[in-house]
Image 1 (cartoon, rainbow, N blue to C red):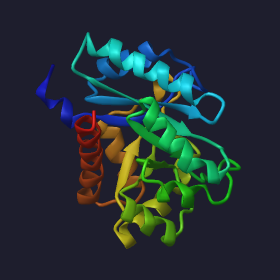
Image 2 (cartoon, helix red, strand yellow):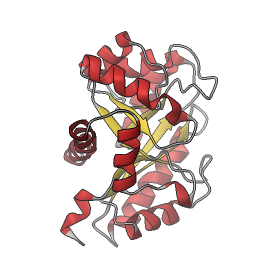
Image 3 (cartoon, rainbow, N blue to C red):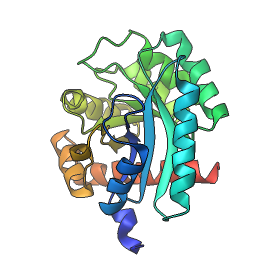
Image 4 (tube, rainbow, N blue to C red):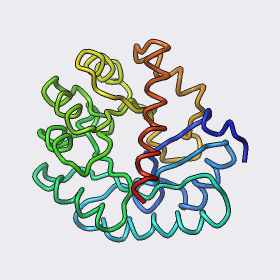
Length: 227
């Protein structure tokens, strides 16, 4: 595989039709591979009713793909629209079941996410990424710094309307940001070049954009070391 794969794309937040995406695990993985991705995370929407099944599927897909290619598939979940008090226990349960990356569906401005979701997510030692955290406040962003939770800059239409706010708060208090596609369909996967454009549109400098992309690499390396 090309050595420059690291310079193309790492995307740790995508969906299959096991939740609300439109592709099989095998297809979204294959499309990422053809696009030259270094790694892709499968993080379907999870709550108390389906978390076991989703992680079983994602783990199996990752194991199958490992026999074909060195592109990395990271099994995970996106904890979504649950009572905030359930986030910590569910994140811990996800890791016990074999999820390597745990994403929490943050308080995006486009959906009725329960107040307190951002706060509980950044306080959990088992959460890796707070996805599209909307109008996240400074207190929660500071807690994200303390617990090493990455705040997502998203390519997802609608959710991305708050990217500028997320970027500004993160810069102000030193939180780490991460770029993901939140892909649900074939056309949602992004290139590294388009990702840089999204980061620029969010108000990041070139240096900050490079650092955000490097955060994906650093998180990926940590997840692989933990295996």
